[in-house]
Length: 538
Image 1 (tube, rainbow, N blue to C red):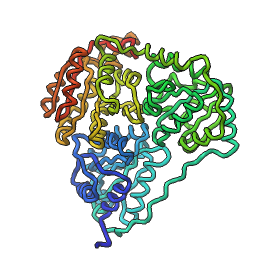
Image 2 (cartoon, rainbow, N blue to C red; image 1 turned 60 degrees about the vertical axis):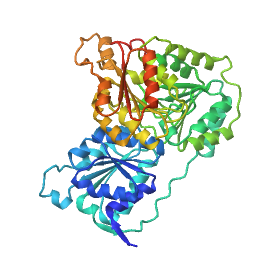
Image 3 (cartoon, rainbow, N blue to C red; image 1 turned 90 degrees about the vertical axis):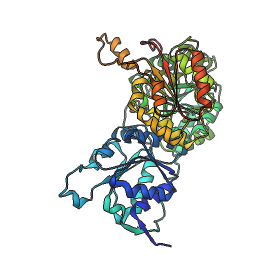
Image 4 (spheres, rainbow, N blue to C red; image 1 turned 60 degrees about the horizontal axis):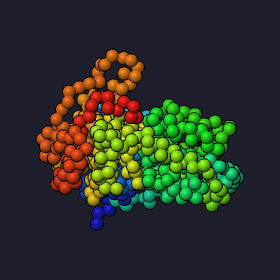
């Protein structure tokens, strides 16, 4: 047995130990050794058609496995193609290891072709940047995994010089770093929080992506039930409490329609418990919604509050699930919300987003949710449809609806769905895109065919940037730069080897979904809607 391996193998073996089984990207000569090392370690390399889409595929796989996503990109234009998705991982709290080829440092002194300071480009949009070196290959690999996963997750860049990738290092890695223990607040802080919870008549819980990343769903649900606390989640945290639960008020973040009902409840609360709530997903209407000098606000979060979107009466930096369990044990339940306010609000939210339209975007969401299995995994692109979907799509588990809800970038839904389907082939996976966002990544349908994925891609077709067109009209500006031609998306699906359907009614959508669930390939469903169909809906 060899006592030495390549530095690229040291990196790949650490990623495999972290649970990684897929890597996504587009190779160049500078990363061929990396690809070989990943494959040798048991990590399948998936060739995408664009690095940006590859990173979103990696995120989709992460949501199913919990292991960091891996993006592989070659020097210069390759890795720069991934900037958008890496910034998204930073803002959406996604652990992503970016493996980039780079020219050797000594070569870069006299060779300039495609050479730039990649670490400088990525430093502001990652948790850390490294340049792999022979002497510290094992340490850098372990640091990258630890930094990506711990605290508030995020992306880490590792530049891998060509000669370092093939350099020889000891096969035996040092022991991996022991993960930090889950911290709970000190006794006086916990006693104060428990006293407030025990005395509250109208407590509200707001749950966010930190809680989701910490696996706090069971603890959130248990505390909500024991103290009769209604739960509002951010869009990313939908499903932390199954949304058919009487205490689950669904997602919030971008919809003035929903905020009209949710914000008065928050303002009426006498205790606000922010459980892993990261306000990076929220619209300006959620800035300083409460006054922590008048209402008791407990903020449990992974990192100190430097955002100033809101303030709290009691700030706790630590583990959301461990803190919720300790708080539950220390407090005493009492009757809350005794006038039926929670049920009334839940009913009002359902009326605000009616499901009985004969046709249109709401009918499409309702038709898909009604027809597809309860455990369907969904993804949403950015645009008007995402706001509507995030309010109407019922989630029964965390990560049941995946989206870019902090950076809100277009073109994410299709590759997110592909990564999720690759990692969980037994689940039904559906993506929802506007027609513009779908066109950004339509070439990845070829990747779906090559991988044998049976993903369902629903496209809202109104030949417009619907959300931007709506804002343009609201500002009484003339129509400009928001409309484009209507394309045959079903034909695009067929062209790449999948199935395609064009639907204009609930009956046609129902039939298309039936066919998609029986298909042996992916399916594109082009749902034609009128311009302005979102008016008054979001």
